[in-house]
Length: 480
Image 1 (tube, one colour):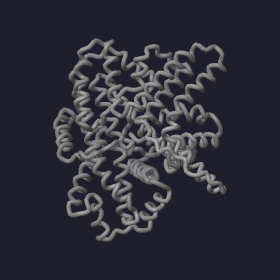
Image 2 (tube, one colour):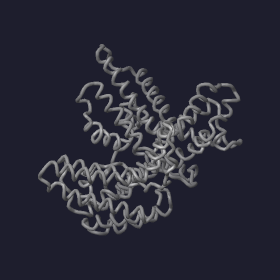
Image 3 (tube, one colour):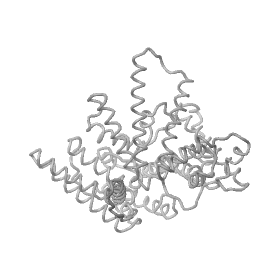
Image 4 (cartoon, helix red, strand yellow):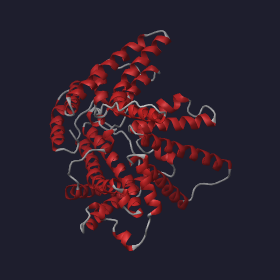
């Protein structure tokens, strides 16, 4: 059941009535039943896997704190962590590991043959597995106490607005949210509706039309000029942001309609002035998860400089692998790790000098340079293979042409005929509108216009109906 479907709209409206009519104690049961029904829409097998993982990890979470000896606690913790990641490894990475070993052996002169299962990974498994792991680690380290109410824990794992693509919320903050006495407030519905509308706008009016262009160019990069390939790379940067942050906006909007506070997962990342700042603004729940459960346990920055840099590279390598079962994703993560190491080295030199605060011009240059670095990395992220990446990059570098024929062919990947220009203008206009909206939020200007925001959101909603892409659509991060 997709957030973008009419079925989901009916599902959510029907949920609101019993949710606000029942007592606070029963709200938990209503939400849990709704989350179970939502996930059942993706298949009975996936549901039983989710239920089994929830049951097993809950049992271990009740058992581990009772163990007195550290060695027994470590053993129990190792077992439950292994049980948590095994389904993820099996469904998502079995074929990847098998193919990689087979290719390695073939280079060494051995022939293992092909041993792939071609299984479909359960929807949201990367996200709910990380959510469970964060609960277990926080419990083991004594940051939280075990949740004795199975229904509350099950809702934490399966909460339907977050299960597909996050955010990866921590158990402590989630339990605080659902323990609050929630009553019906029309302002929650109004604010939640606005956030949902803006998420739909990002997804249907910007991300999905851009995907038509990007998919067309990337499917046969050898037939495109360097200028078209460069534009497709920039468009993909915008597409993946609008696609993922659009989902987050919808998830947050749904939660707000249910009376919950918002979980920030994006903070206008393309206004970042360096890659370190970018990762403080992009997929915040994942970057903080990696920091707290991978980077810091590895030693963080408490060891020597070389060890610190090795920890960064390892953390981002794992981040890349989490995104997808392909070496291009691992390379994408390592590339971002390299960017962070380079940033740390440059900042160290800058601090040793007496350089003052960045000027406005320098800040703009840094923002553009960061966007260029992130966009370059997105090419690797989007490429199907390393050869595909090299083909795209070589096309940009060696077939770049600013002639009239090259410029006039820019809009063609939208439709391939004379309607391409219209599609191009519409999408670029809404991209400019999104940029202006983000700039206003980033710099806090024109705050007096907030009282007229109903006009703005009415225009946004009309744009969704007039220019939204209502074909078969999925969220990019749902595949992770």
